Image (cartoon, rainbow, N blue to C red; front, side, top):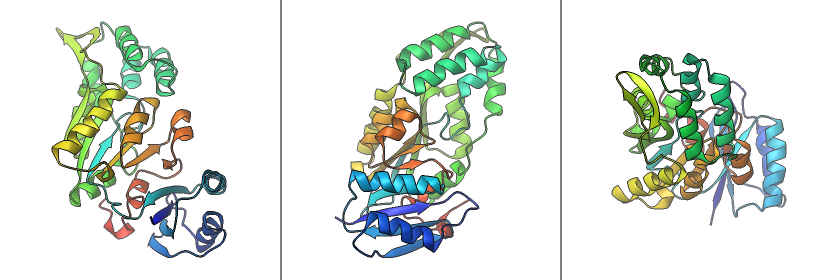
Length: 294
């Protein structure tokens, strides 16, 4: 099977010929490779086989030092037909529940719980219930204010626009809340969205969340459900996320990418965006710079 090593730099850093030659010398110490330029910031390198773990570790050390992301994918079927994306700290900058907690004067306390959960140190569902419980009594108007203030990570709109223009379906799946996934999905152009739901009575948060909790198992379920609905093979799917709650979904997808990954993801996945923005996920699929819709 032929594989592709994709290199991508963050804007405005160019990907130079020296970078490419050095990467080839590591991935293929005994041979040459065909190179396809995808633009000033990305290139594909054809590999006759998948590199072993020692070579991947060596590649990582070299490329991380230069702020270059890399991806290893099969040459066939690179452009995906289904994207399942996490919301908080992936599509959306920061954690929306932490932003909501700021209105209650509890951001530091709730953010600490969020961080532990995202790193896999706490049961996710229990952490959701605990954080929501701390917000009991908060006025619902604070949700609308926090949702209106959401900012998207660089490249998020380009990723969705470009994939949809090329026939892919895009689904936002979050352990966060529908009060945020709904406006985020609408603004970014997702086809569907899923999340947890805060229970509100008389315009006040009750401190409860609707069960069952959307956790890591729910994310895998949505990936499989939509793939089956649209008769797609696992290899036709892509998932992207940042936290421990995303790991099973990322492993189940044909292409799983960790974006600004928490340590558990960084240690578990090969395909990571550590340095660039979300457009790197398009280069990983073989899109060229001129294909990107901004």
